[in-house]
Amino acid sequence: MDKTGFSGFLRGVGRYAPLLGLIVFYIGVTYLREIQYLKAYYLQVLMFGLINCMVTMGLNLINGVTGQFSIGQAGFVAVGAYTSAAITTLMFQFSALSPLARPFVFLISILAAGAVAGVFGYIIGRPSLRVKGDYLAIVTLGFGEIIRAVIRLIPQVGGPRGFSGIPRYVNLAWILAFFALTIWFLRNYIYSSFGRACVSCREDDLAAETMGINTTTHKVQAFIIGAVTAGVAGALLAHLLGYLHPDQFSYIRSTDFLVYLYAGGAGTMSGAIAGAMVLTILPETLRFLAGWRLVIYGLALVLMMLYRPNGICNGKEFSFLIPPLAPRNPEEARD
Amino acid sequence: MEHFIQLLIFGVQLGVIYALIAMGYTMVYGIIRLINFAHGDLVMIGAFTAYFVARVPGFGFIPAMIAAMLVPAVLSVIIERLAYRPLRNRPRLSVLITAIGVSIFLENFPRMIPAIGPNYRPFPQLITFREFSVYGNAVVNTIQITNIVASLILLTLLIGIVKFTKMGRAMRAVSFNKDAAALMGIDVNGVIALTFFIGAALAGAGGVLYSLTYPMIDILMGVWLGSKAFVAAVLGGIGSIPGAVLGGLLMGIVEVFATAFNSELGYGAGFIILILVLLFRPEGLMGRPTIEKV
Image (cartoon, rainbow over all chains, first blue to last red; front, side, top):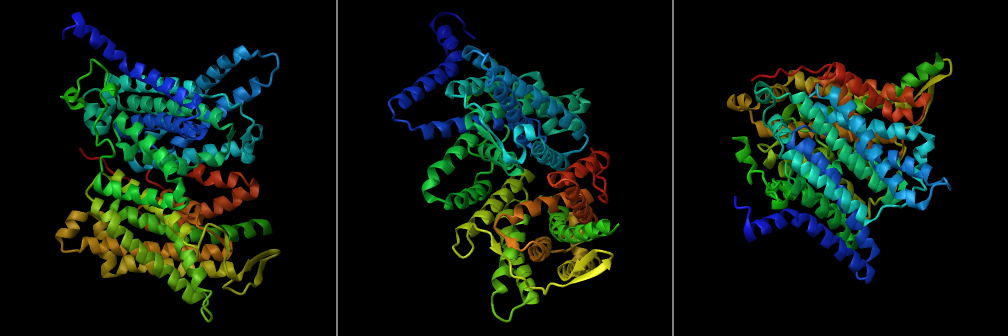
């Protein structure tokens, strides 16, 4: 590969093109918002879309790449959301806390949200990997519902009444930053030897085990990373909404994430992003249809599964979601 | 003791309804390995069918019940034919997502029909309410008796069909090995359609019985009822018919007792038991362990 001269320069720039694109996107959106072209409502939808993308990408690592079937992702989102909301709500009350320190408190609360969700991911992942397939799905479903029941029992975070008064601190910059971080991390993970080990667990875990891959470790790892992603997304969600209620994180919400993933195309990051974005925006654009939009949504899902089973992205990956030095085609890596 | 017996009656009453609904999950899973997410919504369709039929003068409990079993059953066969059958040889997850899509459709289409709409509706009282004392202050009422008796009749009928008829034997054969059953001349598609028919009929009946007890119906009633019944099916060992009955009863009783203890605990209790059972006996209480072959 030629690394000198002008083509080398271009290649070097090309590496950072996604990041540059993201910055241009941010400036563009902010400008359109400033000149009042973009309504606050659209910006809100965009931010929800990005948060959903993050959760779906985490879910993609568990379901799409590692082939484990988790349908309790909303539970991890809830853990993250409540953890960080509890921290910021508590800390922002102190008058001694200077406004300058707030971003740091917020950052710490996001990291804490990720960490706590990760611990839950381990607690759920470690024992439940003894059960496989559909049973794993049910354990994760049960976990999500238990989290919800437990939150209802804690009066400090509002219990069944919901948690209100959370500082609405988040803005597009925060979300885009964590969105980019998630993409960067997951992309590099999936194309690392860990990621390939995860793929081998999906394809045939007995064969993977025979080849010396510790399938349990990799499955648990995937579970934890998926949970951390969901927790961080939950933290952002809490500070975007300013209000949390246990019922927001029911298993219906978990199936939403599943639908995003499989509609976009499981196993690819592009699928996760496209699915979450399209399906977050679609119901909003169909809002003029009032209640019919959900009818159409359900029908569209069935029709898509019947006629385009590989999802919107048809199993292909955007080039910026493949690390520069990785083989273009993941199939090659497996040979 | 009186309190205990009273709670036990409530628990069994709820448990038999869960068992009826769980049956549909377990039968469909047993035969095509699909978690039918749309099953809970058929419960709601059944309840609404009964609601409308019972308004016709001269129609009482029995006609309402029959209609509430037939309508979801036919609907379920249509859904299977249009949405699930074309996907039968695809990865199981695509069928699952399709089932979620069907479920979203079934919840939102009735919402848009003016005759049904999104609001709660009072379910007519189809059974004359009377109470009988059983032990001290513990009482049992006619609705509870109807629930338990009707459920037992339906469940016995189902087990009779599965165990002793030719169709039942075909069902067991298909659930054991679809390809081998097809080679033996069994109409696999027909058997699967029949399974969906019977499962949905029981779900419709469960919907009516549930609405008799809690006489407020709305289009989302099937979501929670369905998810609990599903847990019951898994608890008993999904794919196993006696397991669904056992799981349903257990789920109902545990839920009633936990709710009596703390109202918020009631909902989570079933899931906690489920996870404990799955961790120590992953195939469920009465399920067959699967053997992994290379």
